[in-house]
Image (cartoon, rainbow, N blue to C red; front, side, top):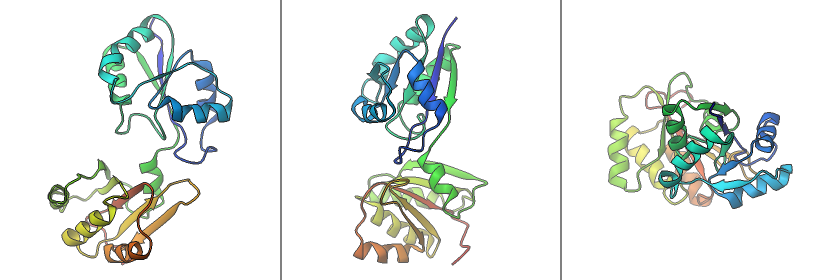
Length: 228
């Protein structure tokens, strides 16, 4: 009988944001797959976890997925973690999960932190219908093209944003949507967590005296101008 692949959510910043079940699972399985073993080692040391670890990331996922499918069929359970948050949200975990489902291997999620959900529920944006867009395109013309396509969308839109171009993206949102409400959540659960909620113009004015630093979650709803 095949064993179980556990998808284990880990903190996105604050080490206290991990469940008892997650720690127990990471201690009990015979093998943990980590996006970056050096990064996950910090988590392991903090919680006294000594389970063997191997790397599973974007650069090796195609080559090693069959190996771990065989391991699950023949040897034992595996827990998979990403660098932070819930694995499978725009990271290589999807590849292993998909193959396990295809092969009839049991996949169980051990729920916990997720940056986009953490940002969404504290943004004040509509939460009944939303879409996760991952990172915005790197080129301005591509970003504007994407925003134009979203003009008629009623779902709240969620992006991960880099400090290198988040100000440009906010300016492009202003160009396409005007005085729409935008929420920017920075360094969630970490020491310098910051919530910026307002019009694009207000956020851009803030950036003039506070240049963007850290990782952002950017949220807006094309049809919602409440609170403005």
